[in-house]
Image (tube, rainbow, N blue to C red; front, side):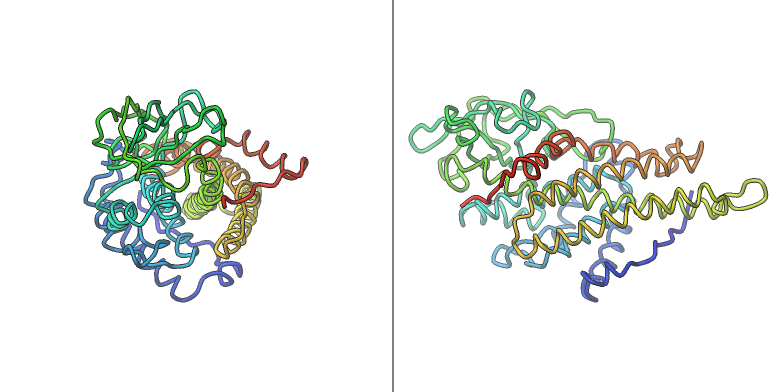
Length: 400
């Protein structure tokens, strides 16, 4: 069904954070996605494989270089260009395609940029910006989940190299990527204080992957990765040995905020679609948008989404000023993903039987959105992290 989307009323909040240049970028990105990406989405959803050509087109357009230094081919733009990038990716109705893009650009590449040496940046970051190399971040393990401290993958140093052994799971881009950013314990006796970060070439002997079959995010390839006596040059260590846990925690703020922004954007998309549907759908002689119970349901959802968006923009502004917003980013993900789940559930209900049909966007959105409270730290883990900060007074500090 073809539907023209009505954009929800632009709030004063938007005007506080987005300039005319930002909006021109949004318009250009929206046009690019509709022309270059949308025609292929159904195929990629079916095959769980985002084809190489679109990565290169994204790179040519500069979308992977938004947040990265000009020295390596990036644009070095403020964080609100990233916000726009994330929001528009959510509005083409493929959480899997969006995840492949942002997991590459803001998970794997963040570590390359922040901890990688100049040589690593030239070898991996520059082609990642170009879209000619694809990366994935490998932290989660089959027996670890959100417990980074429980990591079992090891990296033993022998002369001028490390030998990695272990496994990772639920890794976005874990099957088709060209390189892996891997967390492993270099000093297991130190627990979380003994973790280090490495960049590993996909074709290194001993690296293998199995593609996982998922409920949602179907366009993205998600892999379980095995590391069997993988020899990695010592120069592929990123940052300092045994500082990996602090790097991971530091970057979790960005990852969680990314997922919070994703959540408010897909909520907006669902509401826009549903409002348009309600205006066109008639029952008992009038548009269903005129029924008070349904109108008030939409009003409640729109209010909750606007609150999430406003908080996320404020947190993004603080992160753009290099403030350490781990608490706020954690809250962003916790609440925004919860609201997104509830909003999309209710929007599907408002479409009635059509909401349950695959020909309409809500069915896919419903599946895709469900990963929000799970990936990047489950809501249960996030609540405990927040409790430690607000009840116990615990302070998480950036790596030095």
